[in-house]
Image (cartoon, rainbow, N blue to C red; front, side, top):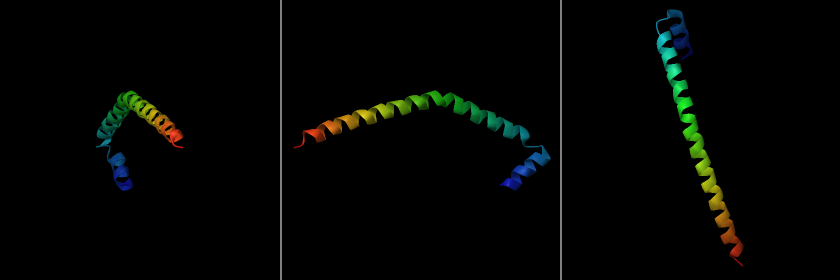
Length: 62
């Protein structure tokens, strides 16, 4: 794989495709960052609520 990357830089024929792919990847990461953060917050709060309810149920057991 490193050989292929080295060949691309030597030939200069695939550099624009690599640059385009890199920019596309950066764009996708930046666009998806906020929704993924919100999803993580939602899952975390759901997990915490479930943990509290389970603790309450376990505390009621004599």
